Structures are given as structure tokens and as C-alpha cells.
Length: 195
Image (cartoon, rainbow, N blue to C red):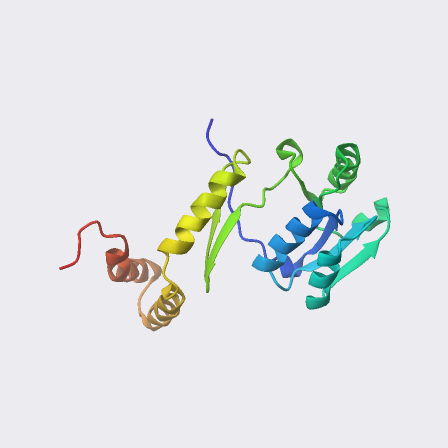
């Protein structure tokens, strides 16, 4: 069966995101989200919140913590929920409540209850590459991420800036611009070794 996921890049800083779970998995999800989107607006609720989460929240003033049990009202105004408690039954209950409100959800380690997966991400300046294994193997995604981090040069950010300047200077219709930009970048994917 083919991977039917549709990759998109969300402007999470424009969303209201809820993370339920203040343990190790909650820390992993919050860290991942903030690494990719440092200005993400997040409310995290957990009966007990790890000190590392509190330290992370201190560095990100748009992260709000509530050290208490989850209440259904926590979903009010939320567009995306990441459910990461240690209790599978509680996760299923929160998922059902979020779905009833038509909120995008990710339930940690439960692909069948996810509207989206948080894949591995490679970031080099403005270049961002997301890797998905359709929820089958985070380990493979992690290994691919490591490989791409090594292979993609840090200078690619500078190249992207130059390409934008070139695109902005090109005159003509969309088709002409695409053709010219394709000509300029063809050597990036050339299989012929350069002399």
C-alpha cells in the first residue's frame, strides 16, 4: 500500500496547540515542536511536569504550563492537540474529545489515532526537509535525517537566498521563470561529474 500522507508545512506559531502529558513523551513532543517552530504557541497540561519541560518553557514565553489533571475545557480554542500521557485509555478519551471538536490530533505511539505524524526534520537555514515512514519506523526516519544532515551543505541557505534574488529579478511570465530557474539549478542534481 502506498503512503497516502500529504506533506504540508504548518505555520504552528499561528495555531493554538495543546500538549497533554508532562512526562518524557510530553518533553519529546514539546522539544520537537519548538526546535522546528520556536515561536509555537503551546499550552501543556500534565499532572506532573518534568523539570526539563519547565526549563524549556522558561526559554519560550509563549509556552504555558498547567501542572494539574487534564480537563475537557483545555481543548477550547485549540487547533492542534498532541496527546502524550503515559495512560493509553486517557489518551483515547482525550482523542475522542478532540475529534468531536474537529481538532487535528496526534496521539503518541498510536498511529491509528493520529491525523498527522511528527516526522524527522532536517533544517539548513531556510531549507526544511521532512521525512515520513507513514508511522512505520521512526528509526529509519532518524537515520535518513542523520544522512541528510551530513550530505546537505550548510551553505545551501546562502544558495536559497541568491535564488530568491534571481527569481525576483527575472522578467517574464511564470513559465519563463520556471524554465530559467530550472536551467540555473540543473547542476545541483546532475549525475555527470564536473570537470
